[in-house]
Amino acid sequence: MAVGFPDFRLGSVLATSFTATLTERHGDAVERIPTPHRLVDWLAVNGLAVDSCTTADLERARELREAIHAAATATAIQDALPASAVHIINDCSVQGRAAAVLTPESNRQWRLSSASLVEDALSVIAADAISIIAGERDGKMALCASPTCQAAFFDTSQSRTRKWCDMNTCGNRQKKARFNAKERRSPRSG
Image (cartoon, rainbow, N blue to C red):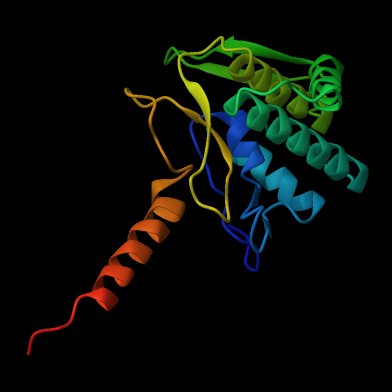
């Protein structure tokens, strides 16, 4: 990863990995795509390589990210989807030109238009968000139990009771806090 920027949080679901480019939303927020070039990096890591990105493209990407987060959060708490979020997601979905292709290894891969535009990549992310929010995939939307994070994530665990968006960050922090609290309450025997 580029020096000076926070690492990306990569997951198995494209849309929620994209919303994780802004973390700790209810604490000291961490912006993981602060520059157009950083968005290019994130897209490339996720198989959506683009040729370039403008400041306007970055702003549109952030707008889509926040719309997906709002819709996914509403889904997780079983609330009505915000109309503005639905509009942004749908608009991004239909604007791009991307096609799903099958690789020799039997995997789905996205092929962007020959121009490899950011709007093509955003259409793939929007389509993924539509798929999970509409309930087309096996899993459910949930919110991270960390009070400073509360990220929306797609829970595909067998029991659908996962508590953390990422066990290595939010889950580990909570486990460490519980351990430290227990240590403070327990007098040490000498």
